[in-house]
Length: 204
Image (cartoon, rainbow, N blue to C red):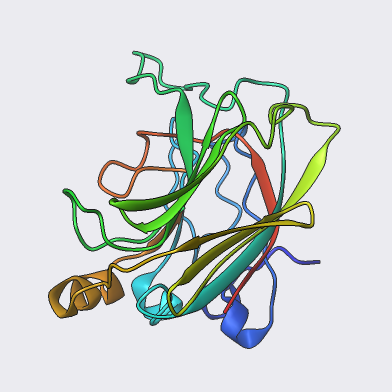
């Protein structure tokens, strides 16, 4: 069983992969120590004290994703939430405004994937996940930073970008106090929702 039930076991530093709860059953909080989730909110937080230094320097994160047969930008908000043509797969940032320093990845409804640690240096992979909403298809994603290289590996194919921007000292301290959030915007968790099954997450 790779559903974790304690915050300390939800992070890859312990070598324990974990799954996110079903995004279509957002009123069920199955991971009480790890999740901030509401009826309208598919987001999931790994608390700052558990995420540690993830994203400040070099990092690695991998996961499997599959669709739910709903549009990936589907909103459960009864009154209607702002609609985006993409959602946040994961994001950790101490800054609410540009240049959004910190690791983040986004998936668009057309299958584009965007990965960055700084808004001015984005690795964009176009239409690499065209069947993203299909529940019958599982994709394996890996994201890492190693020095001046951003690397995304999607279903075994590697994409790289050389970067020059560093996360500044102030931003790094803010980042270490921020949660690592999945399937939601850093500031407002139910903005940029991503209606995907995300499983077998491992973080280093």
